[in-house]
Image (tube, rainbow, N blue to C red):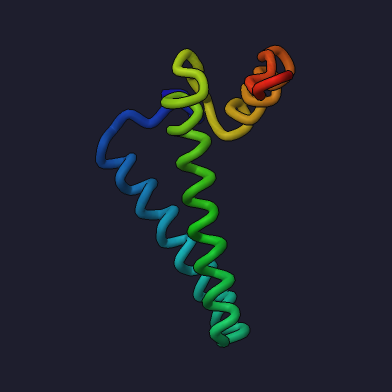
Length: 96
């Protein structure tokens, strides 16, 4: 067994997802308990929403709408791919 091999066991994948959710909840609770206000709650909600949307962009929008050939290995590989493609792809702006 490799230490950093891909997890393929469905039960372990669910556990990993649940642990990430618990970690996010604990971090948000820690911030909110330290500064309980509507502003803190709103900032936490915006942070969570924007993180989810950026995750959706990186792992779905790129392969579904930008480059169906791209197979990512994580956030950094997707960002590198976008940067590389933006330099090599001609502009799609009218009149340019």
